[in-house]
Length: 465
Image 1 (spheres, rainbow, N blue to C red):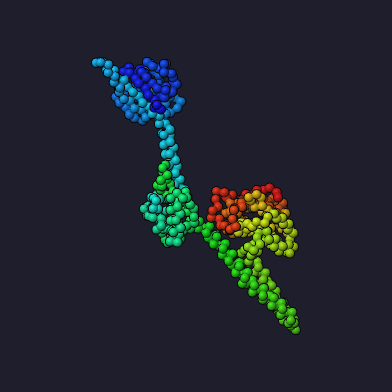
Image 2: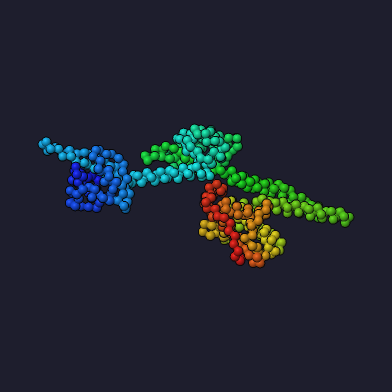
C-alpha cells in the first residue's frame, strides 16, 4: 500500500509496520518490531504526539523530521482480537502522504494572489466574463478606460458597450474560442464610453477552462490605442493631401509656368518695366512650382510610393547635390520592397538628419548608408561638421526644441527599432536607425501588432564619429 501502515499494542509498541512506514524512519522491519513507537519515530514528534490518542482520530497533520516538512492525512482506529474471553486491543495508524497536493494548493493560492495583484494594478483593462459575456469582475484600468464605475459594469453584457458595427465580428470570434476552434483571439475593436465617445482598443480574449477542458469563464484584455489610431489617420491624411497637391495644385503651377514661358518666348515687351514685370511673374511661377514640390515632399514624396525608399532618397540627395552638397550614398536593400511604415519612417529620419546638418553642422559634406542586415534595416547618416555634446541635448527642455530628433526617436521606436545619435564637438555627428523587418506577405501593415516591450530608447553617447 502507498499509505504508511503501523499497528501498535496497548503499550504503544510496534506490532506490525509496512514498507511505506519504514521509509519514514529508514529502518528494517526486524529492527522496529516490538520497540516503542515514540522511540522509533522520535524524529517525527508531531506524529508521536497524535499517536497517543486512544480513540479514533481523523485529521490533517503537518510533520517534520528536522530535514523536511511533510503533510499527512492521519487516521487512527482501534482493532480488537478475540481469543476466547481475552480481548486484545490494538491501534491502527494510517498515514496518507498529501505533501504534493498541499504544495500544489499553496502554489495555486500564490498564483491566484499574483493574478489578483496583476489584475488590480496592471494598466491594461481586464475583465472576467461568463460564457454569455456578462461582466463578472473588472479592474480599475477597465473602468477608467470606459468611464464606468465597477458597480455599473458588473452584470453588464459587453455587447451593450461595444460599437454596433463591431459586435458581429466579436461574437463570431468568441463563438470559435468557446467551441475550442481557437484558444484566443486579438482584434481591434471599438467600445462606447459612458459619455458616448468612441474608444479604440486592441482586444485580446481567451477562454478559461477547468481541468476537464470545459469552458467556465472568459478573460478580456483591452489596450487603449486611440493615439496610435490618430497617428495612423494623420499619416493617411498627409498621404492624401500630398497626392491632392501633386495631382492638383502642383500641376496647375507647372502649367502656369509653362504657359508663361511660352508667352515670354513670343511676347517681347518694348518697355523695360514690362519686361522686368514679366520676368518677375516667371520667377514667381517657378517659385510656386518649387514650393509645391517642397510641400509634397514634406508631407510624403509620391516617389516613395511609386518607386520605394532607395529611389526617394536618391532623388532627395540629388536635389541637395544640385545645391552644392557633397553626399556619398551607399545602398544595399535588395529588390524586395519594405512596408509603407518602414519606408516612411526611414525617409523621415534621413531627411531630418540632413536638415539638421544643413542648419547646425556648418558643412555640406555627408555620407548616407542604407542596407539590409539579416532581419534589420540599418540607416546611417554621417557628417564631418561641428558636432555637439549629446548629453546636453535634452538636458533643458523647452517647448518646440529638438522636435525633429524627438519625432525621429518616436517613429523608430513605434516600429520596434532603436535610434543612436553619436557626436562630439568638432568631430561631426552620426545618426543610426535600425528597424526590424516584419513579414509583409505582400501587404502594408500598421503598427497595431508591434510588441511595445521590444521598443528601445534613444541612445546618446559621446564617441567620435
